[in-house]
Amino acid sequence: MSTACILCAAITGSVPTKADNPAVPISVAQQVESTHEAFEAGASICHAHVRNDDESPSSDPEKFARLKEGIEKHCPGMIIQFSTGGRSGAGHARGAMLSLRPDMASLSVGSNNFPTRVYENPPALVDWLCGEMQTYDIKPEIEAFDLSHIFQAALLFERGRIKAMPYVQFVMGVKNAMPADRAVFDFYRATVARLFGAQAPWCAAGVGANQIVLNEWAISTGGHARAGLEDNVRLDRGRLAPSNAALIKRAADLCEKYERPVATPAQARAILGLRTA
Ligand SMILES: [Zn+2]
Image (cartoon, rainbow, N blue to C red; front, top):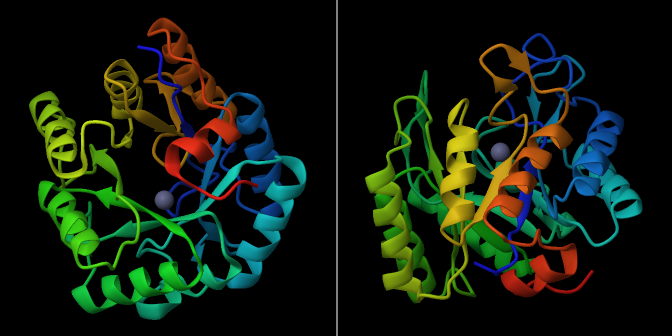
């Protein structure tokens, strides 16, 4: 396997706090520093949420703007991906930062259960987010929490609501949603190849102890991989991850094991069809 592998650092998320792991970056300054370390360890995408000072999730465009500025300054060429996920706000607040024109944004195209609630992504909101991403030339990353979400991405592409071939991320191991199941993972891969073509890039993320499992499945089968404290705060049962960089390094080691070069930001931009930095 020789295709370069894109590593995405999911640095903060909206759930883990410093009580879970003191390395979770909360302030924008901490986020920029943690991203820079992950960048040096091989990450070419930063997937980011922002937080309030009390660690609660925020959707404040001003914070996103400062984060983007910091990453552009300290991590030249790195792909910036903002989350439009639903924990930080409701309705259009979830896309209020898209006018900042990040390279990418996450896009959930259907609803499912989360550990303690319903993750609501009503069709009208999905359609509005698609429109905003087209307006600001942002590539969506489709978060597939379920098989139907891959088909929904195909439908949105067919209807022209997603401009380029969808880039899908398989999310596995979220409690009450799809578990990390190898047969389903293989079916997801086959479905992406059938709907979007054998060469279509895709990526995968696993939550908690499944992070390393999904890293290995994706890297060994030609996909791209996400790691970071958003999804998992531990190295193993007994040890907290010391940083986002440590989790990216673990994925980079798997790339070496499976003889895949870690993609540079320029290679990642080419694979994803993004504008050059
Ligand atoms: Zn996220």
